[in-house]
Every structure is written in C-alpha cells, then in structure tokens.
Amino acid sequence: MSTRSAEEGKRWVVRLGRIGAVCFGIVHLVVAWLAIQVAVGDSAGEADQKGALASVAEQPLGGVLLVVLAAGLGFFAVWQFLVAVSGHGLRASKRVSAAAHGFAGAVLAVVSVQLLVGSGTQQGDQSQQEITGWLMSLPAGPFLVGLLALIVLGVGVAAAVKGIRKSFTEDLDLAKLPHGTQRLTVRLGQTGYVAKGVAYGVVGVLIGLAAINHDPKQAGGLDAALRTLAAADYGPYLLGLVALGVAAFGVYCFAEARCHRT
Image (cartoon, rainbow, N blue to C red):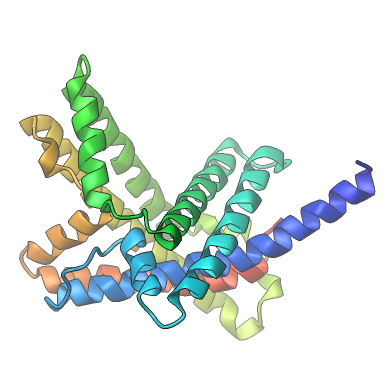
C-alpha cells in the first residue's frame, strides 16, 4: 500500500471514529438517564452501559439504532487503538488512555451485536461476580481480587484527577470549537471525568469488600455501584449528582468528537 493510500485510510478511520465518539456520548447519556431513574426509585433495569444499549433496543426502530451504535462504537474503538499504537509524541499515559477508550468502545460494540442477535442476556453485575469468583478460586485468589480492586480504584482516581487537573484538554484542539463553547466544553469534561471517577471508585470498593469477605457476590459493576450510592445517606442526591456528571461526559463526547487531536 502506498503512503498516500495509507494516509487516506487513516483519515477515514479518524472521520468514522469521530462519529463513533458521538455514539459513545449517546451511551453515556442513556446511562445517566437510567441512573436518575434509580435515584428516584423508578428502575428495575440495569443502570450501566449494557443496560443503556438494552434500553435503546427496546425503542421503536431499536434494531436500526443498535446497528448504528455498533458500527459507530466499532469505528471509535479502531480510532482509539490507532492513536494508542501510532500516536507519535504521545506520553505513555496518553497511549494507555487511548487503548482503554478503544477497549471500552470495542466491548460496547460487541454488546450491541449480542443484543441484535439475542444473545446479550447476562447482566454486567453477574459478569463481574463470575470474574471475581473465578479469581477467588485461584491460588492466592483473595490477593488477586484485592489487586483487581486496587486497579479499578486507581482507574477511578486517575479519571477524577484528569478532570480536576483538566489534563484531558491536552488531547483537544479547542480552536476547532465555536468560541463561546470552549469553556463550557472544559467544564463538561471536568464534571464528567470526576463523576466517572466516583463511579469507578465505588466499583473498586465493592470488589475490595468481596476480597476481604471472600464473597464474590459482594462484587459488582457500574449498576451495583450506582445502586450502592442510592442506598447511602442522602444517596438519591449523591446519585443524582453522579448521573448529571455522566450526562455531562456524554455531552462532552460530542464536542470531543469534533476537536480531538488526531
């Protein structure tokens, strides 16, 4: 393949990846809506990314919407993996962040396809508990589960710090946005990353409790984390704030789709 063809192919990956970033934002907006329903005690469904996709599938033309989301999220994953592999001049942390976004996009694309073919029946919390149970059954299992808890907690802290320090703006070319929206985009990103950090932090705590008590059933994913927040003192208010933060991140993804550096 010639250099010119390779560059053209990369440009198409970036264009389609930007569309995928919008899809990524839509998923977060639906998660936020589900979290608000949990906060007001009006949801028996799963308040996480898989639950969001399942909710989309239940809408009119849900199958068509899932096809669009699956394709968009797949393109988003490819774009982020490309950034992680060939992002010249990027620090290792930026490459890891891009790879993590790529993995998240790929997982959501797979879940969308599973829902389309009718095989996406396992809940996220159940999946997390099975993984924790498998780790617990290994030699030094509680230690491994504790290590997983620390990793997830680290991801949460890193996300919150990223929001507080506004380090995500290093990946953005804010000049591509209308002047009046640049500051708003930064604020949305800050709020969104902090909210995601809180959610991941609670997931890490749940996994840690499973390790301490040797009980995989105490582990859980995002849905369990949000419901744990809802059950705490002033829980509905806390969960409402997190939900608004997740919604802010969803809107931020729309702006990021336009101004993310390639």
